[in-house]
Length: 164
Image (cartoon, rainbow, N blue to C red):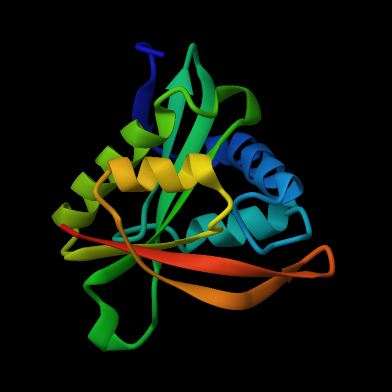
């Protein structure tokens, strides 16, 4: 996927971002969310991701194939230098290096916006995601046992971090 362009998302990208996010929710591999998101939810979410907290997209042949965001980790001022990371790739484009490009750009934006650390939370069974994060220099911090419920079953959540 050499033609992939990474750029800051704009409001016109929201339908594609929503579609890819809903795929991640449906596939039960990337989030504890279980209900797909509608347009109003995504608009409110996008409005909170301006300034330091950014959303970027990966575009191939004018089609959005993935997105990533820096999210507020905690609203206490002691954590102003820490951002939480989200990365979602469309089903047919997973495992093609798009996530690596998105994370590299988000790291640049994070540094530019005064963050010194990025944290993320993933499922230990999501080997594709865990492999990507490890390749990008994230280290496993620990596993929260029975952190959430997906489809009536307790699941563990792994915390990872990277000092920038």
